[in-house]
Length: 337
Image (cartoon, rainbow, N blue to C red; front, side):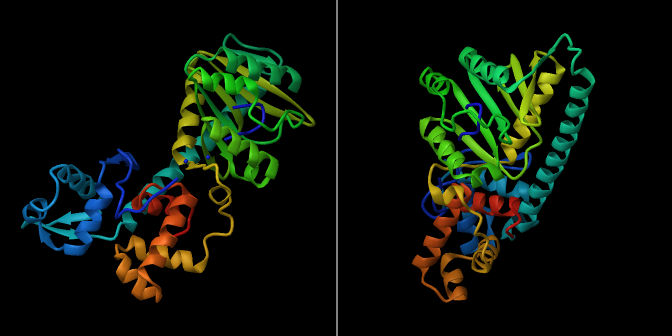
């Protein structure tokens, strides 16, 4: 991470690769292989659970439990499994994320009020740093002194005269095993120089995500301190927050936006999804979330199975989804469905 934004991972097909372990939907977790199990059920349901489980690996039972828990699969009183379109589960997931975003924005308002209340007076757990040059130096010092992790929300060109590449302090930290996690505001990626810096940071080892709008620019190092940067005309000030309930709140705020963010890749296509969704993409996503097979989708769209597979793979890469189930989640999150 650096004084100006940096920081983007990729995707596969559900028929050949399983989703990542513990793919999350809301507060529930889908075990590995859930997408494969769902795809298999789409082809044979309705089917007795005992009969279905006798034809799949033993670990599929856990994946089936996860699908049942989110309502993507229904088991009737006779023990027969029925596949349901996953749209309702995804819409519920999106609604929960919207609530989290609303809470995060409310927390940002509270923090802004706190800054106004203490600015110029200080407090036991808060120090006010004035001027972007002093803030920039503190950014570097905190990263150099971090022991395990640096987390950041990157918003706004508050320190515009700094280099737009991963600074040496970040390279040094990554080389000694420090973990970097950053969430970038979407508008930052419209700047070509900033986008290049984001890719460089990801290549260097930073984990990065993007979210449309962030409430503030901040950096957290370990569980010890946090730096909240606040613009002041052409200048910038900051609050250095030490261990306290306030620092705990800043940590929770970061984790909310980390969960909401879409993974960033180092490739150009993955970082520039602005042309989507087209009408063709929305039609394809609608058919996918309805549980249709590639063959059925190809017939509906009047294209080949290979074309369907290629389009799905491209969308997975664009949205940072490792499975088709995650693709539906990401598309729902962005309002593409």
